[in-house]
Image 1 (cartoon, rainbow, N blue to C red):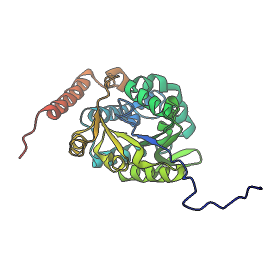
Image 2: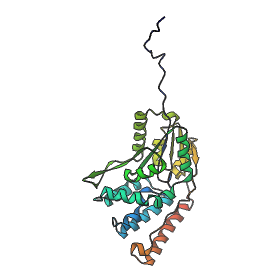
Image 3: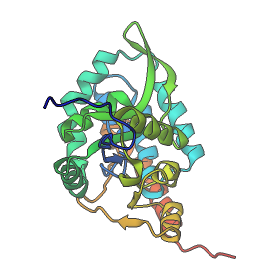
Image 4: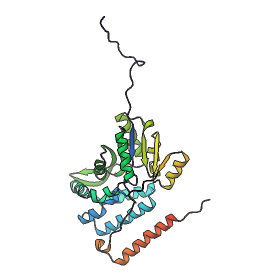
Length: 278
């Protein structure tokens, strides 16, 4: 008897296997710093920014590390940084980032995040880094971690130079949109997938997956995570530190540096002091 081929019907067709993904925010989730601020000193040493710019970046970084940023503050930082890079040559920035990555960023990668990424990769999950930082900064970090898929802020480039304009800003709801696009493109089952972030601005992304995880969460995210019984994790290795430029580096007096340190210390005290609630 000759075997006959029968066309598959919806009832007999084997459904295609859908993938599981792990979506990671970058700053203060994978690395214990801000990727947008981390290279400030290196850009100064290479003549791309002034000592005054370097001091401004260090202050912004210190505030971000201790108190985080609201959505409005993130937008303000975005505008300041994109204005600063206007006219920079892309290949020069990429060269600086690659040359200094292992001294500036690699030591700041949380050991817990690296282990978690390795765990997901070993489980056959698709690992994705989604960040509001520029793709130029995010890509080398992803390569260091063996992550092939990223969605990051895209800056406009004309004739090999940054124009200061933003093509795609991956913040808040835009991260959620990127997750949906990647899931559609790669066939990812979001209900089985994971997402990790430290910030309440990423709640739209976290809500899309079946396993949302708050990592070192800011206060609004911690509150939301507790209310929704989300997993909460603390990454502590390395301890997130920041350094202010010294007087020699920024060309200002030691008294001004001391004043800057006092401002930062005052900000830390205000942030740490319990606030009365109604």
